Image (cartoon, rainbow, N blue to C red; front, side):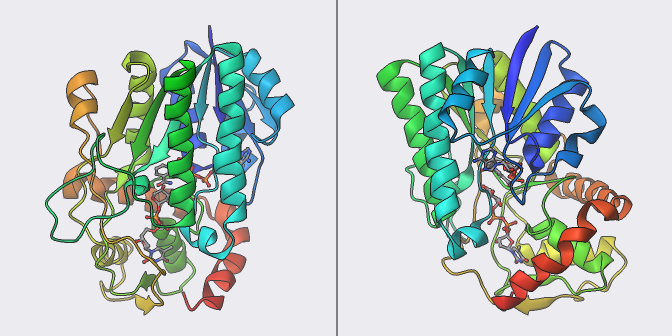
Length: 336
Ligand code: NAD
Ligand code: TDX
């Protein structure tokens, strides 16, 4: 069996990746290391704890990472501080976990000659104008806007430097905005679904013209597995499902409609400072070289993905209810 160490496996995408791996890839023996920050939740792995080795720990802990990585074959690195709005309030945890944490992993991977897959984001490229027909690809120059995206860009640069200077066996993927089960309710889509379930009006930042290239988390994770199986070492792969035509306003309207509210049952709140306008991803390399196909694509796919996500938050109110009041109080302090 191949040993897989998943960092950040108690968070949104990491937990979905653990479930996806156990369901589709029995060839892996899975371990998870996670610090269980406010965004990590061991309940996300409750149903599979007998099949997974779970270690509570910090990726910045050199000795721990050295020990865990010496005893694995592949590291899939999801752990990070992930919310832009939090990075505007306090950038330090982002510098610590995203940059120092990735550096710590890289040094252990180098020392023990292990395979690494580094999970990154579209935000490292900055943003596009609304009328720009271009999309981000593997050659787009880095131009991050927020402390979060700058910390992720730094981590990507470190991985590239370790590949080139030390010859480590690594791949990188940059994916667009994910949605699906287990996403923290501070994020756009689950915040609005849980607002409606709590009889609070959804909150749209500014005019809501901003566009995100939404992808269902299972499509992200199927791409990561394909890269683990067939990706070329040293390469970067863009992951996106071609949903770059729906702006935030339309997503809120769609959620209202799917949840039985009038389409305009939402309110405008303060905009995010430095708010990126539009992200759009060109995933042709992944599709043509590795044969990847997303499942939830185009407007209908997004509706299906949203319906499934709404059903999950409706059926799992215990999972999010405890965080709701504090999350909304924090937003309210900033007029959001
Ligand atoms: P998340 O915030 O839901 O989960 C992050 C997990 O990492 C949590 O379980 C947290 O406890 C853990 N963690 C944080 N700091 C840690 C540390 N120092 N040591 C150990 N564990 C730590 O984030 P997510 O949305 O699942 O994102 C996962 C990864 O995917 C991140 O690297 C993020 O940059 C990237 N990404 C996210 C999206 C998205 O739309 N959410 C899109 C593209 C890429
Ligand atoms: O209440 C809200 N209202 C609103 O209009 C919130 C929380 C967000 N927004 C807007 C801001 C963005 O334009 O919705 C869009 C999406 O916001 P987020 O969910 O915070 O995501 P974003 O900032 O785009 O970043 C996400 O995608 C890239 C993830 O959080 C990152 O981890 C990932 O790297």
